[in-house]
Each structure stands twice: as C-alpha cells, then as structure tokens.
Image 1 (tube, rainbow, N blue to C red):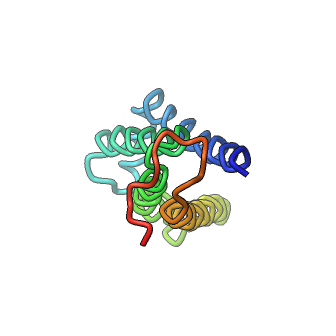
Image 2: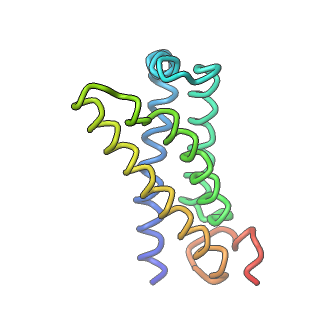
Image 3: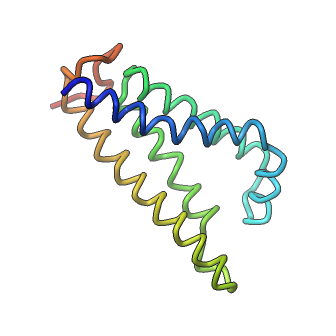
Length: 138
C-alpha cells in the first residue's frame, strides 16, 4: 500500500506543480486575467499562489508533513475557486459553462485535499515519506 499512496501523492502533486509553473512563466497574462476578475494586487496574488502551490505540492510529493501540505493546497484553492471561477457572474453561456467546470473541479480538489489531510494526519506509518504528520493524530 505504501507504493499506492506514493503514486497518489505524485499524481496529485503534478497538477499543482504544473499550475504553479504557469504562474511563474505566464505571470503577466495571469495577472491580467486576475485583475479582470477583481483580484486586488493581481501580480502579487499570482506569484504568491504559485509559490504556495509549489510549497504544498512538494510537501505532499516528498512526504514532508504531507498532512500540512494537503491543508495548504486546500487553503490556496479556496479563494482561487471563488475569485477566479465565479461562474455566476458570467452572462455568456459558454464562458459560464467553462467557469462552472473549473469551479466544480476546484471544489472537488479542495474536498480531496481535506480528506487526504485527515488521512495523512491520522496515519503515522504511511511509509515512503520523509517525515510523519505535523498535526496531532489524537
């Protein structure tokens, strides 16, 4: 089972690492879109969310306080989901549909990250990790 959990951690982390790279390689374009969605300090927000995604994903990937890494990813996704994918504001049906899909995907990722946070926090012997959980298992 240790290998299965490792594969899951790798696959979960790849999404966030790829997204974070986009934050750093397309900062200006992403900041422009963030600004159009009403994000205050959009460039700083893009860079900060990218940095937090890298940190959380690496924690999960490497098994360094993977519980805290999952919680961090859930916390990053929460404002991003509601600010960047506010489908209820769109009047164009195609744009609304696209944003609703992204919103629902992010909600599912938040749910998965929260479940995995609880799983990692309550499972001290996951194996194939560099540390145990940060949060108390009790």
